[in-house]
Length: 269
Image (cartoon, rainbow, N blue to C red; front, side, top):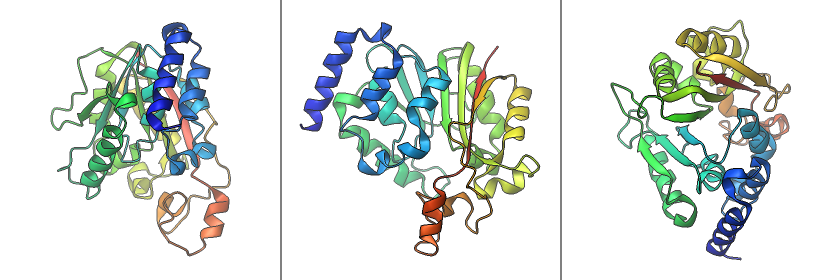
């Protein structure tokens, strides 16, 4: 079956089910098993638990959702887009190609090429670049949910933590959800000092987001990995899928798997 045939069949089934009333679980199953997903992305499912994670956050097919910095692989975008296509809306916020990080242009090009190649699934995704100062993600109180996956360490390193999460707070509706997945450091670590390793203390995340005004609505161990010792020469990128050390001790890091991650759900009061 070609990708286009699969996509059209998926849309027909979604219409048959009545998307707005459908249970989110079968819609997620359909998106996660879709042929549009790359083999490399599918291989990460056993570490990232997308169905369980999105159900924990309370995703519904009619929601207005913002995905922060999806990255060139569009890992969660390719799951979110089919689920939200009919009744909801997905807005992706990616770095502009001229942003300071050296990887920004490559990620911008890869992300847009991936979505351009599959208009049957992605033509309704609203693609935006992350604005500068002032940082405004959309009309105040317009989003039901904002999702960020493994981005917070970068915002800490760039001194942008407060600006980003205040903008997230502003764009959410009262009662709206912020879903955070992040490489988890030790609670006694200094967040600024350790952000270069990719890890962030969970205690820091909760305390700082509550200072901004969010209320912790729940936390899950869906993406925990007790085998992650968090003490690698190249930080979290030593582990898969990065393998920053190349073939050195690769079997060891493959056996550990992807990082230990906090999975936190916050609400805007």
